[in-house]
Amino acid sequence: MKAALGKVVSLHYTLTDDHGMLLDSSRGHGPFAYLHGHGNIIPGLETALEGKEAGFSGAVQVSPAEGYGEYDSQAVFDVPRGQFPPDEDIQVGMQVQGEGAHGIMSFTVVNVDAQNVTLDANHPMAGKTLHFDVEVLEIRDATPQELSHGHVHAHGHDH
Image (cartoon, one colour):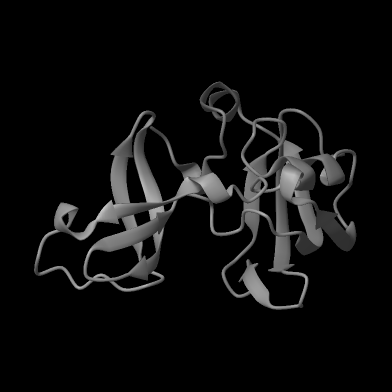
């Protein structure tokens, strides 16, 4: 069976950046499963896995445009410090949430001073070329419920 629209693909992956720094891995956490063709994973990885069979093992490089997007410097902005609770200990690197035009959004704090908190709305991996080491473990037909919901239901999960 091949990875194709409507198939559940289970795999192990290790994700690194251009410098070989580990960003994420399924190793030690059990396989990662997704519903192929339903936008459950980044487009570049899904495209690279199209047509692969269980047993495939290899390296996949994903450009920023096919991953988490290009870095947008206009998505970095200052918010007056007074917009945050006065007793909140805001630190560079922490994630904060706020409401935007499209609902709740996450931001990374990139600078803090007495007047402003500088927030970055880019995904933390935006602008990065992603290097995946993948091993496809299993491919199966999705259940009708998984297809209607657009995602994998693990271990008999139902909702």
